[in-house]
Amino acid sequence: MSSVLYDAPGPRAKRRNVVVSVIFFALLALLVWFIWHTLDEKDQLEWALWKPFTQSEAWTTYLLPGLGNTLKAAALAMVIGLPLGALFGIARLSDHRWVRLPAAWVVEFLRAIPVLLLMLFANEFYNRWTDVSSEQRPLYAVVTGLVLYNASVLAEVVRAGILSLPKGQSEAAMAIGLRKGQTMRTILLPQAVTAMLPAIVSQLVVIVKDTALGGVMIGFTELLNSRATLAAFYANVIPSFVVVAIIFIVLNFALTSFASWLEKRLRRSKRSTGAVLGAEDMEELNPAATGGTFGTGAGGSI
Amino acid sequence: MFDFLSDYNDPTLLGAFWMTVKLTFFSAIGSMILGTILAAMRVSPVPLMRGFGTAYVNIVRNIPLTVIIIFTSLGLADIFGVTMGASDFAVRGFRLAILGFVAYTAAFVCEAIRSGINTVPMGQAEAARAIGLTFTQTLRLIILPQALRSVIGPLANVLIALTKNTTVAAAIGVAEAAYLMKTMIENEAETVLIGAVFAFGFVVLTLPTGLFLGWLSKRLAVKR
Image 1 (spheres, each protein chain N blue to C red):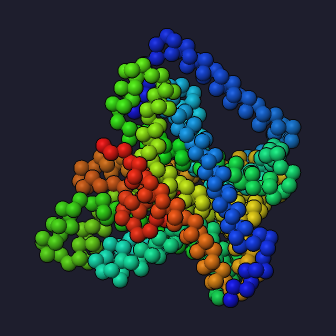
Image 2: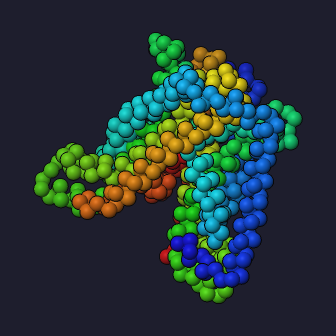
């Protein structure tokens, strides 16, 4: 598409592109020089500050346990959130108004609230009314917050996944005499799960990113929290930020690439109905598109 | 029942939500501008700019917003000395938070606009080229006006997500809604009531935005 916006460059356009490139490169170089210069001035480029990351101690004491907790919370949130989301998603498609409407209220309400509020509330809730130990409480609170929020997002994903299947599927199921429950369980859901796999994997990226919130606000010892401890020990603010950011980027980039690979593969496969719910569709998952009840339809993708 | 609410005046409940609104407002404007520039870069004829746009989006999208916000305080302000011209700590936190939100949200705005550019039929750009418009003219006069109308829905989602994301500013001590909620919920006995009040506040902020922009996106959609 982008090539439609401009002609194949002629001699003048080529010259202009070179000039623009040079100016842009100069600006970038200036920025990099400023960053490098300031870091050098503040002694952040000293090898002593970067050296810990080449040795196993920093990794085994701080980063890997932190990363482990991040992954643990993300995995738990997905494993608990997905069935819950499926339940609400299917409930929203129910033929009975008294099932459909409460499910819609719960989903739209949870989607309208920041996940941080849910975490803060869950933290205090566990503190006051349960006997979860104070070491375990941050994990519980983070997972609860993530589950509540992502279940509501996944409910919409499940609903969109089921709605994306061709109508012939449920009609054929009805024609051979399956009941509503049977149609959902044996015909629609298995196909919908395949169709929404890419969307589920991209939601995992959001969950991984949101765990960092628990690290700062309620003291869950995940990667970002471990960074603070590490930086306090080695006094390397910038290097620790760079390393933690790279870990997050690599992890999430791998997940995103996996999601788009899955999406491409599913779109190619001839056996399915061709219904796929990709990351792009997730961003358009607003009430207008899926016939939601209220207007609080923020995409789960940010 | 609501007596305890008046015990807090730094910030007050309304003041905290007003801070949330201000954060959202300025970040939305900034990220819209930066996002449009990034989108233009990603479709531009200059390979270096395309590469920069792609790299920016892929890097920023994959870093947690919390990391970015904490970095603006501990990295940008403390190490690089970028204080946004503020000597007061509260003002500095406010401006740095906006800077972080703009940098993060712009990546999503860029992707939304780029997907909008893809929905504009090829004939439009071809016709623009045929009458001799340059790349910037084509983009400014023909493509972007049509693309922006078709992405109001996705941009509304980004705006609502931004409203909710402003709570992350509490991590660097900006006195907005989540910051006040954390203080309140730790000090008061009415846990459920406090949760309900703040949840209600966010529903009030996001619901009208979603409804209005949903209506607007239908009204302004290009009929094809």
